[in-house]
Image: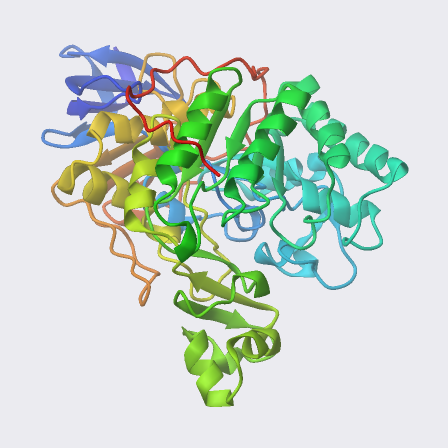
Length: 499
């Protein structure tokens, strides 16, 4: 057998959750064609992977790379940590179907400037991705706030019947053209006034098309229980599987409630398909939100349009310099970006290790001083939380980044190392693996990632992008089911009521 690429003696963690095994892997064109002891095979290129771990390429289920996969198709922040597929369009914001003439509404400004929103249809966005040929694959959600931006004169109200119908028509067209589902960001002020009737109508369209509904909950602070119930009810009404984005117990007064939140997730999973994603850090990052301004946590300003000279320092430092309150300082800085140190380590670990959670970076590639999760999420889970702290097994950590993600977003033949699957692969040295990005120096390559292949093409090797970009848009080609989750859940979980 002669193949394009032969990886010999690899320790394979195949993404399914089963334990590691050693084998050779043969790749021809875009797919894996053999996994065995392939002594009689030869190849155009043969790699000796003795002592290295081979896994499926990581699937980043929570990104805001919508315009970056086109404007910066090298996608080094993701490729360098082993990510081979990004899911864009999260938190209710997507680059399509959108055209803008004025200022970019918050938080759509996380994705770029007005000129970056030039895709009036999902088909136009898909065509732009194909033309850009990014180094990673792209699966796309349609953002609810983005839909609102196209049909409403202002955001601080409910949509009317005609506006809902117009949003639904755009959404249905995008789903028919291959979008994997819809996201919402109900916590943000430009979606907060959305009533149940508006969400139900749109999520029902997602369910009819066989897509997935993801949501940045209306409240991640004291109102988390009610916000989770709202999401469950909306998904059940629409008969769409649900993913809760970056599940967290935010705010110092909410710390310690992860077990109760996860009990709610478990209970919902008994009757409906529900999952969540999370990132392995105790700080969040977004636009500067007045509702999150408090002296109970550290808030770091990453950018400010009216006062760029004040970026990259704590909010309280700026307030002291100006002689203003924290709230008045935040108002003066807006629009701006911030990192909020608003979670507890113990809560985050519980969510990360839960069997219904996936890994997503939620990185902000357009932030001039990004949260370190943009460059470090996946190595951090593997090296720090699995290898060093033993929070979860290596096979379980890989499952959360690969097959579980592929299944929940309908990505056929991705997220697994098996014959017939696409050759999206990561080869890494576990001993050398480290996330090096920090809050003070967030733009930094992970160490220990030896090789990344995307659709069979070597895209990254020994700390450098190869220049070969083989990613593509992954159009939805399966119907996702809202059936209950069958994965076994841990016994004896605290069933205390979450109020």
